[in-house]
Amino acid sequence: MKDKRTPDTTVINPDRRDFMKKSTALAGAAGIMSFVPDAIRNTVWAAGSEGLEKTKLTFGIIPLTDCAPIVVAAEKGFFKKQGLDVVISKEASWANIRDKVSIGALDGAHMLAGMPIAATLGIGATPKPTITAFSMDLNGNGITVSNELYERMVAADPVAMKTRPTTAVALKKVIDADKKAGKEPMTFAMVFPVSTHNYELRYWLASGGIDPDNDMRLIVIPPPQMVANLQSKNIVGYCVGEPWNQRAVELGIGHALVTDYEIWHNNPEKVFGVNLEWEQKNPNTHRAVIRALIEACAWADKPENRKEVVRLISQKSYVNAPVDVVDNSMTGTWRYNKTEAPQPMPDFNVFYRYAATFPWQSHAAWYITQMYRWGQLEKPVDIRKAASQIYRPDLYRQAAKDLGIAYPTIDWKTEGTNKADWILKQASAPISMGPDAFFDNMTYDPSKLMAYMKGFKVQNMKVSMADLAKLNK
Image 1 (tube, rainbow, N blue to C red):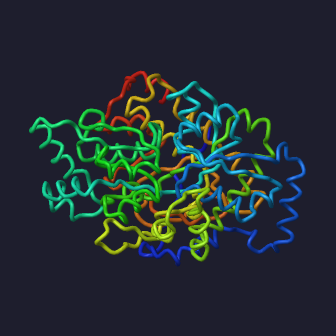
Image 2: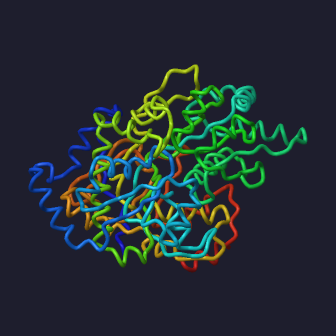
Image 3: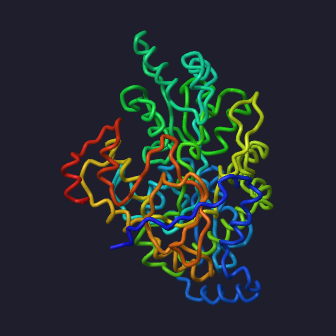
């Protein structure tokens, strides 16, 4: 059984939030390889490329700023350095990503953190064992509403709307008023049923006493189409990744209410996913891909490189969005509305710091709890076992050892217990970590999954807690 212990922590300077200062933590996390000459490092990596099972690869992405690790790895030569010839395929939807990886049309892809879990457990499609050995980033999403709804929320509870992070308290009052007046439920959108966005939006709504399945309509819209649907009044709000929150703000058609960083500091967002069968046939290739992505994330997380990241991903073949819109969040700021100046948010996009690339099995288990909470899983499973089969830190560690970087030596950690920066000591070398607090002050202990799930005040579970408890003692 994997180590269940929570990490030893040492609180360090809680005021050190500036984006530029955090480059020191990045430099420290680079580990001993930072002292090795490039020529020697290249020789080490090249030696591992001789046994690649497959060198010509196609990876899928969705046009979001957090496709950056794959784009950077391709554009800056990190894939090539590992002996890989990678073509990037921009896909129209997450369903396309899921289906093309499933049938082998894509070797791997930019995936939502919940997608490998859903694919393996058969949520929304025929079960296909899918794994991830690499987390692409932390944070990166936001919840945006129309100007009209924002104004109604301010009128309903001006005090709540002046407090950040913004809660769903005012929205609950608007919804209650609509019910009393006999109006149809309002419509919000998210990007995919098993998306981080769906679970973040639902978590935020439920914290304000809103039942997302009965108090409103939730529909699926691909990320690039969110702004147009808000503008045409098909929806009144959405949860999406960047640049589609800031795009609505820049156009003056919406207000960004809250970011996912504010909901849950340094939450896992995207992963790089592959079929288990593909990994078993191409273990050396997969390991080389992970090495390239780790390097790309380390490069992309350096403040001095963020402007170039913006330039690369803004291109038509990738995100296809105005540079100034992409630049806002990617360079550590966030704009809530068009009339307000951008606010500092240095951790809105984290690609490497805080062990961001490590696939924590505790994160996988958290997503499974949400799948149960909202009735997506209808049969009891051993959550810890499923998490350990789908999220593969063992494969990550192999690549990390090749690069000589620090990596966690545990697979599970608590969330919501650190409101300031801290040090992960249960690692090959100490790793600087960021806050992990939830905005509602909840805590998540993966060694007490049933107790955590019993704490959901708003939920629509389809599995009895008694049946679930039999497999999750």
